[in-house]
Image 1 (cartoon, rainbow, N blue to C red):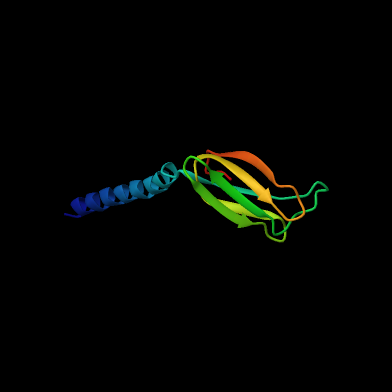
Image 2 (cartoon, rainbow, N blue to C red; image 1 turned 30 degrees about the vertical axis):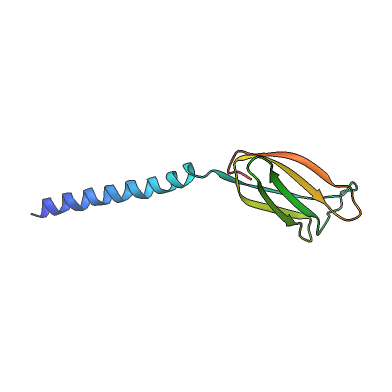
Length: 107
């Protein structure tokens, strides 16, 4: 009887171990969004706080807007994989645009 219970406990622990290993793999494989972040600077290299940053995909109509912090930093999280137009605007400066492609979970 002890050998039988030991076998059941051993099988249960192996199954639990497989589940624990599989959960992180599933979470990584189903992710289909990434992060876009950066720092806005002026032509002299000084950071630009309170600049407006927009990210937009014309086809999917995905659009989000944020502002840079005091260090000129901005971040968009959970951005679906796709190509986007990133636009920076700030009073007193010309606006700037750049195409960005989100294709990885790595920022």
